[in-house]
Length: 416
Image (cartoon, rainbow, N blue to C red):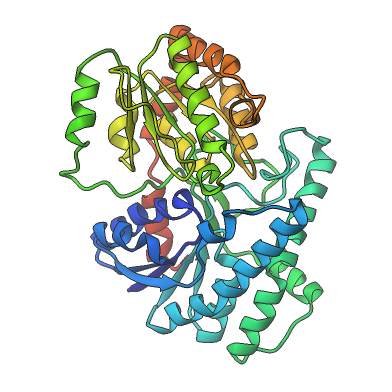
């Protein structure tokens, strides 16, 4: 079967689908992954065909200002670019579309026009439930009825973001135009399976979800069998006790020339030294860059979390879904520093499970009045209080027994 996986967004929105694609290809399917051109090396390294999508999420995020209204405008513009690219990628040949949360609102229409099946594979539990509020709406529960109502409202916000892109794509594909209400009723009536790449050890499946909505466990970024950490990093790891990893993924502080990256780096370095731990700083979109001198710190680029995290004392991260899961898979305590979107949700889950400290506000490190104090205290607790590692290790054992990619493979081969 020719399978096209589509994913758009940050590294964490795309990389897990490389491992999933590799698993499907090992089972005898032909797999292509469509994403922004910057991910072509990542996709090809997994042995998958790469198909380009036109929208660059980093360009859309960088320099964003003007508050929520401007962010909504940029997000809507991103979706309008994305639709034609998805249609072009699918037109190159596919018997099945596998859709991420970002691409599904458009990809379903391409599948309809081309008469091919599709399967939604989100990385967040985004269906309305009374168990918790929408993952992008903060962490305060509104009660069961309130949480469900907020979940439905969250889906309507997504509908609005994609409305222009959907309308233009349906016109391009020769499909009849439908009102927003008709599209919503169609979505609500859709009873197809949705497989979420989330571990139920981290988020238990809500009891009020309909049949077919499942949390199957994570799928992971592809790591080659012969992959190794860079020699300089290996030397650093061997030279002393396990370090604390610090990385903020796709948080694009470094894209702004306002001193944020420098302040963030200075406070991170100060916090690690106050906590008396060694550190590995991953530069990422935030532009972290530790001092060139000092044998207690090392700055690295992109490295496989699967290889590095098990050798760390703790992981300081932005609480993105992928990094949160990778740290738990390694059985390592977390210090979450959430910034936006679903990150406060994952940070709260880490704290509730005892596998992470309470969240450290990003502004405490990045703003002009920020200080390293809160991060230093949290790192010291995560490294020196055994309960955090015990909790993380217990979750890791549950995750080891899961096979998220295998569950997707079963669904693909059983016709969804």
